[in-house]
Image (tube, rainbow, N blue to C red; front, side, top):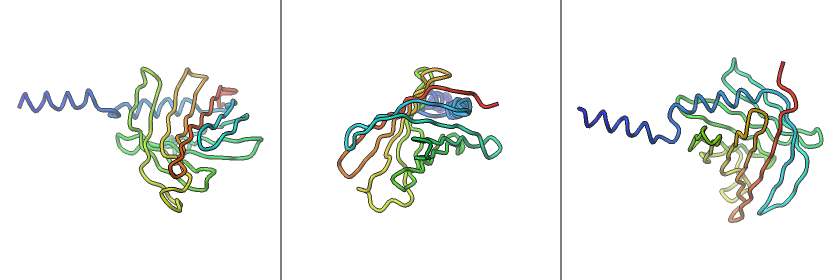
Length: 170
């Protein structure tokens, strides 16, 4: 019995997500407000410019909505939520599909959450352009970086959004 208990404790200690999902979700909730910054796409496609973001809480506190805009026009929306002990996200992409991802690793000591692709709705084929991975870097309470890992067939892009807080929600 002691051996089984030790195995359970060891598994919990090396679990990439575990109870950290709640803490990571709390960090996402704390983003509520207005943000401004820049984006840079590199790889399969290249572009850069200014981007704004709004983070809001919905569903009686059960979901965080991230709206990314360029020149005042909505570009992409991501909804983050918990599913049991997992942190998940659905990304409503400018590519007109909706990848769903699940946190693979949560390292809040470094301020990084990495998500892996689970599946997608409205994806014409496996080679169609889509977000296949995602990272969020909590630099500090007023600075966050989003990294979209974008696939188009065999081509890969790393799309980085660097945001700083403009205003907290009231």
